[in-house]
Image (tube, rainbow, N blue to C red; front, top):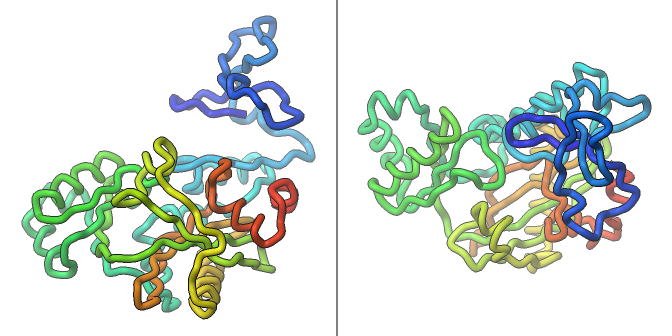
Amino acid sequence: VFISKDGQWVKGPLLSERPQNKEVLHLTWAQTPEETGEFSGKRISPSEIYEEEAIVFPVLHGPNGEDGTIQGFMETINMPYVGAGVLASANAMDKIMTKYLLQTVGIPQVPFVPVLRSDWKGNPKEVFEKCEGSLIYPVFVKPANMGSSVGISKAENREELQEALEEAFRYDARAIVEQGIEAREIEVAILGNEDVRTTLPGEVVKDVAFYDYDAKYINNTIEMQIPAHVPEEVAHQAQEYAKKAYIMLDGSGLSRCDFFLTSKNELFLNELNTMPGFTDFSMYPLLWENMGLKYSDLIEEL
């Protein structure tokens, strides 16, 4: 089942194996059953996805996909699904809520300042003073609720901070300004419900200033080091923080926990992603493959 950007639900052909030709997934939807061809899809209402003994794997990113919205819909129609529930999805999607919740269990994070769009419009000078009073440039500005690094900007001065906030507010009414630090990025995969398992960390090796949407999905300007070359105690600490964050946010099924690692081996939790990518070059399945769990077995377990 596919969901278009304008909210149309389309049921595609039954695929017994992974398509070798990407054109198979370029669906057009039929207006009547007679028009449905081998590779066309049929427009359906959302409630029509319900099937007895079926399970939904909501491989969706961003708003409405991993923020609790689709999870709430599945709960409403009593459809079992893979991954975090409504509350965990919503809290983990919201960068501000995540930080406040994880502060309570002592997980280290970089300094940050939350900014409301209404405050920015009402008194931008006060917002500048609050940010510059708590943080030093460079800073990173992010929409509170977005995925895949959409709307994120780096700011080296006040003028760039203004532009970055305007960009973030295109996507959300709340933004977060975070302290920029020189650090590596390492990631830990998490699997399970009550019995929580974690992987050794992997590292995102970048050829760009920061890991934005284009770097992730368009230009593929990253490499992955699995496992990451880090001291054993750092790897263990990252696993412990990831597990603690997962439990605190009431995670289930799967998540990927991302950290910054400084040259002094200080760890700062960046985010917990409740529906990590499953592409050919995604970190989550590769981390589990390194632990001996094959892609197909991982999906079966989930």
